[in-house]
Image (cartoon, rainbow, N blue to C red):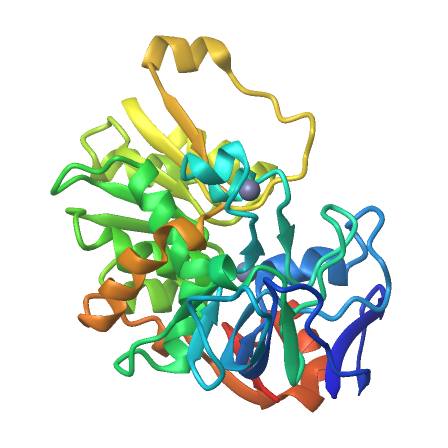
Length: 344
Ligand SMILES: [Zn+2]
Ligand SMILES: [Zn+2]
């Protein structure tokens, strides 16, 4: 089959590799129909993931049709349209049994190696799914492949981030970072929020946020003062940090009002971030960090898509062939594209 593999920093190649085969009675093989490139893919693309095995097949956002199942698979059968949770989990460990899928003792992220055990991903014609009854979920006819690819990862992550922000109806919410994840957070937050203040430095991202009903704010030195002006000097009720990295978290911590929530869903790898515990104590600030839990949350998130309450598809800016993956990664890294879909 054809597969997009990362052979070294910024070296994506689509090459012929052996077809995956059933590896255990719990596993399945699917034909991938739609796959997407995620900001998280860039960390390995840049060579930032210690221990990454060059040659790993990329991609943790994908949907498809079941091709073959192991003897113990009960919930899906060949021919079923399915979404794949971006992270595999065992369903048996203490964390899985208590509804904490992202902390599964046997977790692995599709398309990654190093940080987790190697698990080849879905930017390929076919993919091996290790724990099909956990990782796969049948798709209703009313949810398109393109919509479902968001449920597999970033829309579910945004959903968890909004849930952890504990919004009351009508709250003022700030979204820090209006890439695809931030736009998903706006779509979910607006189901409850009063005003949404969207911060970014990229004009096209601010325009996209505005088209979803958010108030665009250029994330420069004056941004915090502007947010305070709009909120009678207090700051917002809740902040959802969707960009990752220390500068975004620093901004997020300054935007929340006293007794406010800071819900982080951007990715962080910096080990030495300095929190102002004195200010957090004085202001009774709550800081919450979530990886996203598509296996735990997919039914609720799919319902939002099925009912039309959330439509992630307009965030797709480019539709390309799997064979164009190297060019797609280049465009995505250069921020020439908002969200790229690849089809095998
Ligand atoms: Zn992702
Ligand atoms: Zn587990």
